[in-house]
Image 1 (cartoon, one colour):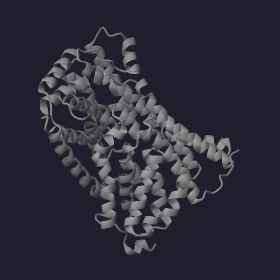
Image 2: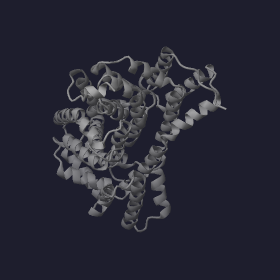
Image 3: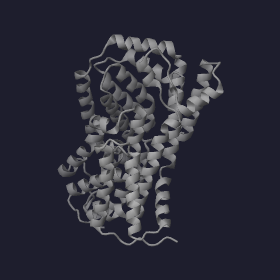
Image 4: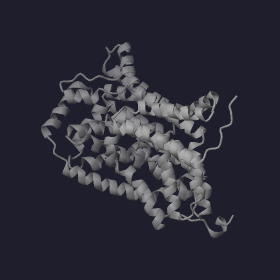
Length: 464
């Protein structure tokens, strides 16, 4: 039988959360340790603290289970993405995209072109993870071949993908936020424009400037890479079928899991058509362990030896640990004990926006899960925003600016871990170049203190 958790004081919750963040921050950022170990240590610390407060093991177990439950679908999707990456490379889809890109895109305009391309695909599919692991991966390979800074290329890909995600009615976080706030989806998306369009425009300008100043490319190297790809992979229109299939599934409103399963199957069939002598056992090995390139170029081999279900296991392990930690922080009331008193004492527009932003960013830092960075602050600040005369739409925009887009910048978060693992660039390295995610909270703060685009309740509604 679970015992009732004794009420927490504000300062006790603050001290525990600071220690948790300190353990993870010192381990990941200070010592450069893989995030799994610091998160596990933080998890152990929270459990010891809970036992010291006489919380029984049944309650601890429930907290862990409730935390992990929220990540089951994302974990399954990440496993499928690992399989999809390996089959896309083996079937020639990623190499074909790279060759087409080399022929169509000027080096000086490469980064802004990547930003726009990822934004357009993101707007169509509504998933940052899908864009980065498909079109983004091809763009990343092109950027490395051009001699650009990998962190800059990764940041540009992520910025464009997240920007497109926020423009898409298919985005899970757009739909979740509108549901939590009780808003029409398109009303919520219109509210986002005050943050995402300035952030997107500034991001595009910055990557354009940096793309011009860092473009010291060797055309010989590009031509050599194209030659290697043409010699080592089956490059054809047929190889683009998996991409066309994704857009078809989006038009048919097919959910992510069946879309990816179908895509993996079609890519595997294409691979068997291109290589009739390929043994099914070897195909299964590619899906499970990833594709290993054997070309005449060491750089191409390193770039295209990726994917597979096994490659996602470190990500899955970290997600399980992070969500377990988040589940305990929520179960023990640590997050609520800090957010609720703050929300109740704020009245001015700027202070409300600042506090809600800080809360969403804080949930990302402590829990590492996008959905919770929307749900928890949304519940805590909804009444405070209404009492302060601000609409649910105003809060919804703040939750997206501090919750959704910031998740990709946290080294131990679900988004940060996945993107770092997919692109092979550490979160802390691409963070300074992920301009869109950095600028959205800034735009939200400016809006809050200047009153630009901030929707207020009508007087009669405020008094209700």
